Amino acid sequence: ADPPLDTVFYVCTYTNNDILAHIPKGDRGEGIYAWRLEAATGTLRQLAASRVEPNPAFVVHDAARNLLYASTECIHKKGCGEVITLAADESGEPGALREAGRVSAGGRSTCYLNLLRGGRMAVVNYWDAIVSLHPVCPTNGIVGPACDQHMQPGADYVFETNPDRVEHWTHRQRWPHTHCFVTEPYHGVLHFVPDLGVDKIWVYKVDGGCHKEQDAAKLVLCGGVQLEHGQGPRHIVFHPRVRTAYVVNELLSTVSVLKVQPECLAGFPGDLLSEPIDMDGFSEESVLFEVQKIRTLPEHFESLDHHKSHASEIRIHPSGRFVLVANRGHDSIAVFAVDEANSGRLSLTSITPSGGVFPRNFNFDATGHYVLVGNQNSNNLTLFAFDVDTGLMKNSLQTVYQPSPNFILGVAAGDADALTRNKTSQEHTNQDDQGVALSKGAKGELRSTNDCKSEPKVRLNKWLLLATPEQVALGCVLVFWIYSILHRTGA
Image 1 (cartoon, rainbow, N blue to C red):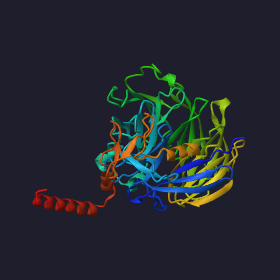
Image 2: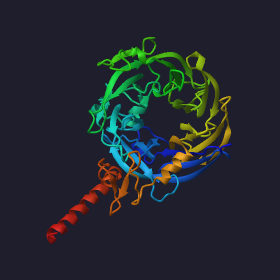
Image 3: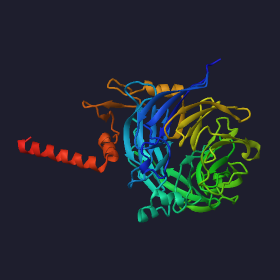
Image 4: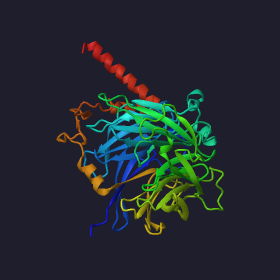
């Protein structure tokens, strides 16, 4: 028999609470931590801690190029959100990462990344409800500046009034808040964007490509599906077999079960309507039709006040038989069984304590037999065994210290090891368009080995973003002083 498949978990942490849209209570982290789960023993051990700033809050793996991409959360200035391209650190330390590129995400509190077909990446900004489309270099995998952007109606409130996070937390639906950009797996044509602020699921398609030899890529809004007011849709996931979507509603701690009906869009899957259409999620003629809504909290627990508890992540078990949701406040993981014969409707299986406080995220290992939960405010990761037959989360196997975990990505250990083996060096000779093709210049700065440009002056841009005003002022004085000396000496 083959040995159990180990998993490397990449865990994002907050590095600067002062510039977030919310006020977490966890400790300050380094950036992104790597942990290896040994499936045979159910043992978790830390591999590395990589300094990635500020506030990495989402990470996605590109197995073809052996790269990771992370987004950053901040609201302190216009356009401060970024997408960071990460490669294996040159030290060869397992799980260690280094920055290979950095580009503006075009908005604030960047919360979601989606690698699309055709060398493109969709990027979601929560604070100002801006969705952007970026090219991904086919040779070195570095994400470039946005080739298209779309801001949801009503999000100009951010630029007109400059709200702070206290107002945001008090009035969660005062303006739009896009939260993710997920591609339906049945045709791969439509992309769904939940908007917590207006209780809608926006529906997009993408036309064209982002590279010079292609027509300019465009985000095309096909329409919006209105859900019940006050729910606060956060994330959407799709069942792998049944044409059903599950939306976790953050504010009222519910899951909406929706039939996916792309044929309701005239012209699908070819030329769709040129004008976006409004749809009702309770109409059978909608691209998303709600067939069930179910609570994620126990019946006795108050769910109308999101300050007491609000849902965070939703994930489907790899088998497709279960849906899991995390509850922040009640501090639990709700497990639902999927009835595939009945349009994917859900029934509650269990609600298990998360092993800490404020479970912001969780994920499965590569085998589906373990669940790792990140408890943000208690600074810990808790590992559970998961019964793939009953859907029950068994007693926690291990709890480890982890500053302010906010997102967890699980990568099969073989793929994670490949990332380490593919570390960039001056001797790197991979010429495949699917490989990482970066080298170091004479002074150690990152340089691209092909025509795709990496984000220029990565280190300077990062310093300018993170430096205090006093440090910036001192730097300017030093530059002026050096310039004066050179000018006097005729250099």
